[in-house]
Length: 243
Image (tube, rainbow, N blue to C red; front, side):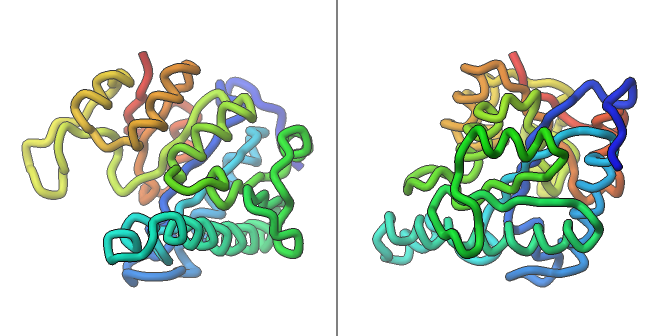
């Protein structure tokens, strides 16, 4: 049974965006079940606060459309293959969540009725209101759009109060902290600065869509145990992208 959102968190409904690579652990490809289970536990702790959660998961651990295109594959075909990879990841996350008692719906932008629900906005909102986690798969259903853009689109359609972008680092830096010891982390950064400085938070269309709808993006480390719940309580290290 979930609790009613109270002083523990100021958010009632959020979208968690993670990359497909986040699910592969240290193995370099595919799905790493212990990693998927750990992320599912993080989601459950936040859901148990009474927060309504949607998710968008990338597909780069299985197939990335841009890389396929760069190797000579026709871009539209490559992008559709990438969308199918996101459905595989969504089903894996659904299985991990339901194993720990979290009711979940996988909602696909491409119809595949045997494995996922089609995207119908009002139905998805109702799932959230009933305490179910909604995992949006297959991007926007269109080639040339990334899962970052899909996440921002769905967050706006679901009236989410923020996007939580789980990454390998604890915020937004002016350069790669893994390569530069003097990299500077931002506590807050504007949408326009993200675009002008190519900070790599999300792709340009996703940042612009968030800016135009005044939707904050909170960037945090998915590798920090309890990080997702902690940030919702105002703790931990993160960067907020906003005006």
